[in-house]
Image 1 (cartoon, rainbow, N blue to C red):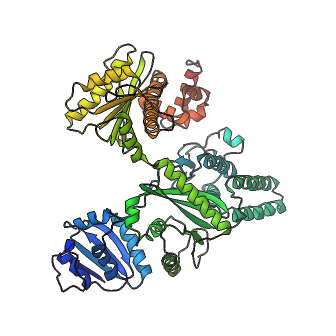
Image 2 (tube, helix red, strand yellow):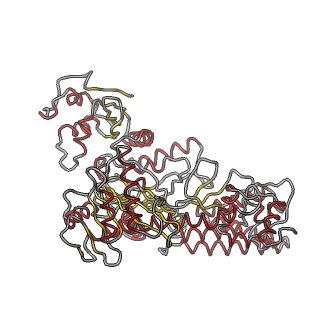
Length: 640
């Protein structure tokens, strides 16, 4: 049952004493709210959703927004000033309200709710299931392309080793050929090394190859004990039939699976345990959530989320929806146990009810997790001691590590310290830093990074090729970069940064100040010398040498190191293009597109020269004939 109530169309004698600060018809409407579970949707005058929440008692819950001063949650008064009306959806139980709340938040993403967004930084393993002969790839983005994804993996080194084991165990192809081929070809060296089943040569049917992909899927899901038992049965059967070569292959697969499992084994005596473990870490302005996935006692993957602390605190009475949001995806496997922290504000009984309802609906629909029988119940656990408590501490440690990476503590305090140290007239909330990178007089570039409130703002990064300066003149190059940046902001009516931080000493600072003199109301400026770690600023009577542990110096060094990294990366990129792509494009029959494809496949000229004609033919756009011709030309026999 849904009802919409608004301050514009309902006014009645209220049951509560209005706060003089909020004497409006909207305040009095709470007396008409039912005292039942449900979901409330707060909207502004244009009908835009501000906040979605659930309640056991709708009247009591919504009333608190008007009667409480919210001194500990200052964002609520800001939301209430925008509030125009409230829509209600009444449910039978709190568990139903939680399901509805999570669905609505996931669909509408209201301004003041916690938004559960997966981190895209870590890699995934991708099985190209849409292909007749699928491959196993490492990717950074999940797309809706029919492929199957596993991850993200926080330990990239272990992930790559597991992928290497998987390719050897299941003899997966590693080429980009569009299979099946109309005419079989001679397989590459991987087939001779028994690392590929040779589908390009017609040595294996699509059905048999797919059977290996099914085993691979179970392997990556952590169902390795079941997989090993099945392979052992196949090995015994092959031995009885005197198929000793097949039995030996299965024996090697079993050994490799056990070796790969040791990489992910957590030494906590938890074989055959399936669980997800949640950990929370709280910073000054952000909250980090880590979710570790254990299957058959193996740590399969981890996911990380970052929330704004004000939104997290705003949802303190309705925070349980975060967990259902994560498990609502069709491709998200729900384990038998979910371990949650006891200090995060989650309600164990409410979450247990949600998972019980979901399991019941799944059984009624006749669905279950792929490869597993229906599980009657997922248990929500708040551990107090033992192995599960150790797992909870591990998840908390991962959450803290992610928080330190994404939201360094006391960034705002560091800015205030920098302002005081440099004697700046105002707080430098937006800082832009410049650095020059070159080799002698060649490939000269400048990098610029932007920090907002002490944190990198990647969308504000810029890079420049130096155009007007001849010879090695770092001062003139700095002038050009700064001038181009400020002129662009002026032409676009953009906002100048509060502070420019220059990498260098007095000379670079003086050059940048000359550039600033051409503009009205220029930003403040300072520089940091590389070797001496001394700060220079026109706002200081003399250069400033701060101790290594001083927060202002740490912030300046952090910004300086980031702009140096960014400038050097750009310099290497254009230098690499000059040294490699131009060399490729000089070869007969190779244009810009083919040069890019060759570099993408082989990575360098050296590897291309070492590649066989068959490997070159695997690159898009190359036939066997053109690959042979290119190989002969590279080897110095163009006429053969």
